[in-house]
Image 1 (tube, helix red, strand yellow):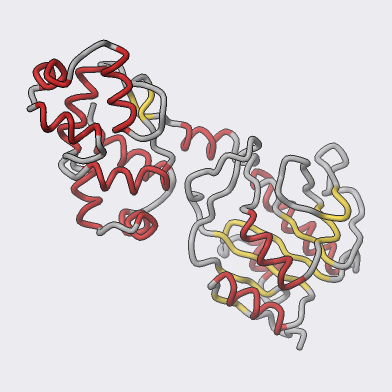
Image 2 (tube, rainbow, N blue to C red):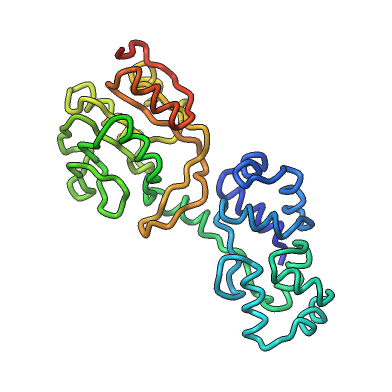
Length: 292
């Protein structure tokens, strides 16, 4: 099993560059390059793995390779010496691997011996390509919004499984694209498969006075017609500094999104927008005429 190649595929599946992943994991870029070349350290894999949703399947239960190797060896009734002989390694090397140390090349050899059909999971690609609309806003983003703007009155993309706590939810069955909105403040994290219509709906709801203040969380697609004609110059745009880790419908944290994101804010005082931007470490593209 070429773990380095699998890590590279997982990183690319999440839409991350080597520099971005290295920063997220707190490792050097050279350490990540070595890892993807299958000659890095297991300790690097341990730090990188959670950020790309990487896990070895077909080996043993657990998320960490060291734990999985130990369980697989025990399940097969093999001694450390037997695994070492079968993998072409020394017994101290196998013991080190089971403690989370050693080199990736050695880990690959042990896994190939213990479970020749083991592979890396591919759910990170599947989720973003097939289930891209099932991604709930991280609680820390919502907390920052509520701290600055107060309670959320309306969630026009409501889902009881999400972390959004709003006074009124418009569910998928009610269809927020056609149902009238109302309230002091709305938060919108729409289905990205129908992004253009939702961006337009937000713009219309603000223009028509359905909502007093509104925040929309969208992919940072500043080149689109809808952004240039419906948002730019009208709403304040907070460009988020890092890719968000959304949650699944089972509230499992996803790897970082394969795209940058922005928070578009309609109708809020400039001071509040700046306060939220500071909390999120975001850069602001100010509207043509901000509310002071």
